[in-house]
Image 1: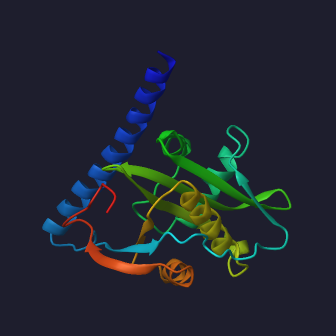
Image 2: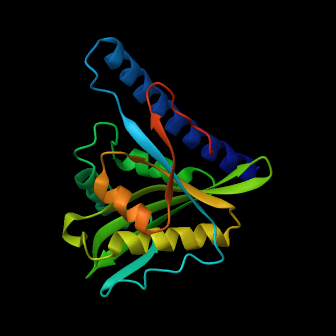
Length: 208
């Protein structure tokens, strides 16, 4: 009974995430049909094969990466993500979003701290598709004060290492094409652009 309730909760969280994406898609299509072009969002689907080990960035002096502590780190994590994605009209972060992300089966949230302050967040997820496991780097966020320190690279390596350990055959992610800082970070981490997507003409919701 307890397992069934847990499964229902995870399914409900996943459904809420998909509903939010559906609303974004409808808004984007409506804006484009109105002739504004404001919702024309170009994204890269990036991918990397799962090697025996990602190689690692060697870590960052003074930065500790650990699992999110529910009820302890939540407010700091949401605040950081709101700051990092303040420019992004489709990335809304609040406590319910964080709870929904955490509740989806196969998800792990990692937090990078420096001197006790949260300076980075990474969300990774394992998808079971047709008997195969595929890893998703859902999102990375790094505080402005920690940019250029290697924190983002360390979070990417940490997440890829975990995904590889879960037996995925490849790791993929989606990133806005104009987010050049993130694109460069992923390229340096060994990802390549699998395809370019105009997200509100088509928006795949299942792993590639």
